[in-house]
Image (cartoon, rainbow, N blue to C red):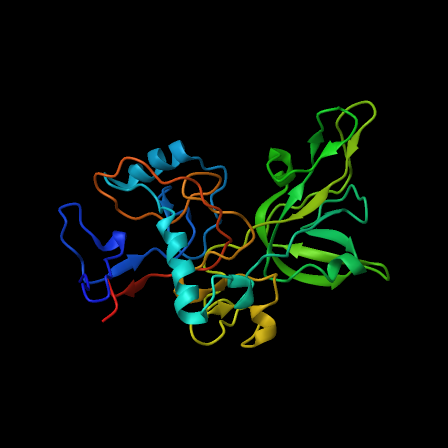
Length: 300
């Protein structure tokens, strides 16, 4: 409840629309994905839903029922306050990095007309790819000047052969190349695609977002570090500052590899917000893992 001595006020998510205060706050844990019922849900093991906007998030979340609007920037504020309380800093990078430096695009190192469920890369390129992480495979489109290839992740065909799928293993192909095996059923060839008379698009592998729940203890490629600051890899300072893996401070998971906002590119986990008609302005948020968390409305 409100603490008048220290001028503490309830967290806004703990207040009902009628003004009464809940004794707890439940924060959604996972980035939203399309669940088995076809609706956006905060659940582990889902591919983050891309291409969400302020307006379609409102529409899509309310398919679950009246009052669902998606998470707001308050969720970001919670993490800032958590860092201040636990780490005496607003600089999250001084405590843990999350996935802030894991981005690559490689053209197929071997062009083959045969279909395979692996992507060929050079030995050096393979060193940068983590088994258990997620990638897309496809090809780009003509750039604006029509003289080159645009391989932006927003290009639909960059996900043509594999859309945000898991890297299962990496094995040797020959003395110079490695095979990155993907969690797909239908194989693909690596022959370039003709975009125009003068431009061909190479088949390309692109790093993508970690899926929700990637830092859970049940994940075979993740061991959360102690004190709920779950990072993949190992329980060590090195893992926390790995910069390639998501983590879960306070059980919530936003440090992945993309920007989440309260109103654009990606949908954040949903929560019920009756009588609230709009989301706050967009605030960039690094990715990270999440699960339900209850905290007191105010310190005692």
